[in-house]
Amino acid sequence: MKAGVLVFAAAAVLVAGAASAQSGADVVKAKGCLNCHEVDKKKVGPSFKDIAAKRKGAQAEIVAKLKDGKGHTKVAASEAEIKAAVQHVLATK
Image 1 (tube, rainbow, N blue to C red):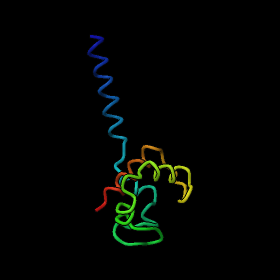
Image 2 (image 1 turned 90 degrees about the vertical axis):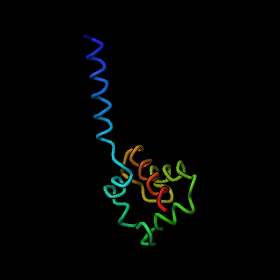
Image 3 (image 1 turned 90 degrees about the horizontal axis):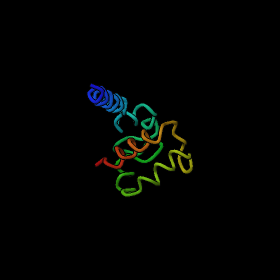
Image 4 (image 1 turned 135 degrees about the vertical axis):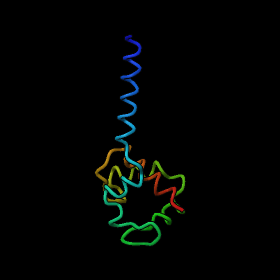
């Protein structure tokens, strides 16, 4: 009986965590990235397509810039949200 309760509790925690995680596209919208960037054309900042073309493989560096505000406005988001947003932007074709 106790093992069944533990399995159920663990499954509930996993489902709750997955439900609260936002997709990269959701983070980009929620955190205001689209105020300065567009998918396919330069706005205040470069387009997501240009970023993806020039910065492939630089995910860790981009995440650090957004987290620390060095070379970009500091983003008020968790590291997981920033990683999801960067992954979304770098996947833009």
